[in-house]
Length: 267
Image (cartoon, rainbow, N blue to C red):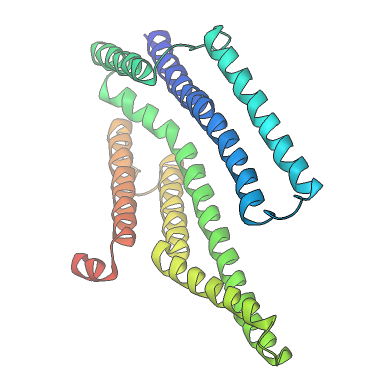
């Protein structure tokens, strides 16, 4: 039974990866020739609008020519791989792969229903997945914490630089362009911090990870609230508690995604 379920999951994972690869292949097939054409148009535009009455610098000619040759060679290689079946899913549409994925998922669901283990076994399996969930939550928490620190330091440096540049330069140039860039950076970071709220997301994720880990430790040690002599009852209580904690985490994430007025109404 386990081997069959694992085989279905491997098939689904393989199809999902093939869909990603196929999308990348098709994107390259269409984007690379378009980029070569755009490079040629840019080269011609520079000649017409910038160096119409003079010679185009050799450096510009060399860069544009090299870009067109490189993009053209990449396009030729991709079309060769597509029409000579070098790629695994050459001449296969993404739509067909998605259909195969849907069928594989349906087979997996049907097989899982037919071979559904008892609830106690499912709860025990769920418990074994908790350490990985805690690790995931902590990783996301660290990601948002680092993002928040980066944005704050960038905000501090840009804000301090505005005053420094203003005090250093009396003429409007080149300080004017620097001040515009710094002011734009401060505005963007302030708006992004208020909208995405990385500090709050990091705190919520860390709090959820700590709570789940606390319950997992209590379950392993057999202390309250998991000190019942009935192991099945303790396991059911543990699964129920962890799911409630995760539901609260999702609720907090939804509140952070809502505008401030919507958050006040929810609260």
